[in-house]
Each structure stands twice: as structure tokens, then as C-alpha cells.
Length: 97
Image 1: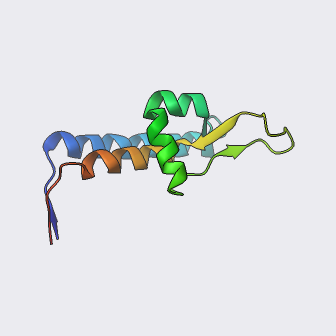
Image 2: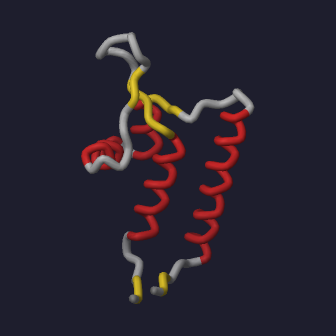
Image 3: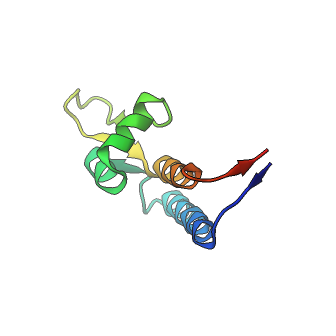
């Protein structure tokens, strides 16, 4: 199988990988969080796309336990970045099997 990617798509993939690695390093040091709020997820990735990923089971919303159904909803930023990047590259790409 051959997948053709442009230079800009490859650099975007690398940049996303670096961002995910950086986020994980911060989390391991106790400085950052792997979660972003639903409003931030909607702002960064568009509401319709996040809802689509949730409906397909690709990402799962999380809540703080014990705070009730009206508590803030969170998403894993690393999963959202991977879904975002993968979706952007798959669109309009020619895949040769």
C-alpha cells in the first residue's frame, strides 16, 4: 500500500507528534493535564467534528466524579489531536493498494 502525502502534510504529522509527546512529558512531570474542557475542544476542533467522533466511539467525554451531571465535560487532548490529524490527511488522498 502506498499513501501519497505532501510536504506540508508530513510536517503537520511531525508537529502533531511532537505536540503529543510534549503534552505527555508535561503530564508525567505533573505540570500539564491530558484533558481539555468541552468548550476548548469545540473551539479547537469544531463542535460538529467532536460530536461526530463521540458518536462513532472514537473519543469519550469524561467528567469529574462526584460532581453530578452538570459538571464540566473533558476530552483527552492527545486523542483529539490524533483524530484531527488523521481526518485531515485521509480527505482527498489517493491510497494505492
